[in-house]
View (cartoon, rainbow, N blue to C red):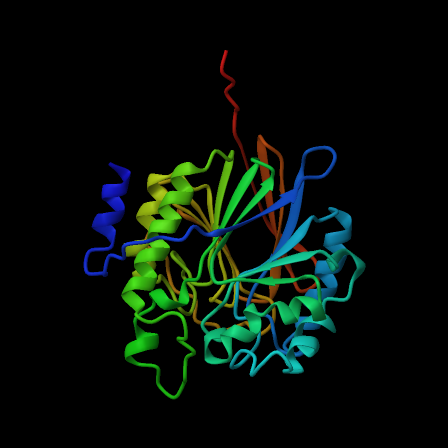
Length: 327
């Protein structure tokens, strides 16, 4: 029945005969069984637009909560991604900026639309991992953390957005390995559906660059609302984390219970064009400025905090689950 849901979602997309599973990674919990990590997005500006200040505060918080890893929600290098594996922007915007001892952990990274304006293969290349072992960037993949405490589904959301194909303006996007687009999206949706269906993790978290729900500059992404949101609802995803809007934001869905968290304040922000939200009770927090998120979790509890560029805690949210054990 749930597979039929996916078939309905992808009407108009070409069905392919084979499906490769998303690559999987594992990350162990701390000895006490907990996990903690930071989330930052839209950051790569060679330290400018307060990127260095955000990085400094990330280092302080990272040490305080003893993070396991960092998640990047995309738009890793502005304005047009990397030109190649030898682009100095990799060092100038990443290695030379996130220098705090606590940030010398694994970075799990997705691509954003600005990254697609450069050489995508460069960011995906193992050569960058040799230059800086923290770097791990793939189009889409699954992280099993805990293990079995939480499963993170990292998704390549840029190819979903039609305007990048139909109206790219002056930009040139690197669509190598994406075309034909219908096949690519169809495959990805089936992979996501399969992974969510088979997941036995206590917490299910999906990470993508583009917003699903946002009152910020870009607003909702219609294509994700149509194609991805029903999967999140059907398989009871707990949190969707994104960047794209250069802000910090928390929307709590009143119908599905999904928490929509935007962490796109890694550098340039303060757009000043915040929209109103149709259901004010869903809008828990909005900060039109730079900052990042922290997440601390166990098998029964999740605690999320948003920090500004000065390290001040602007918003907190917590939830818990009771675990049932078979007798």
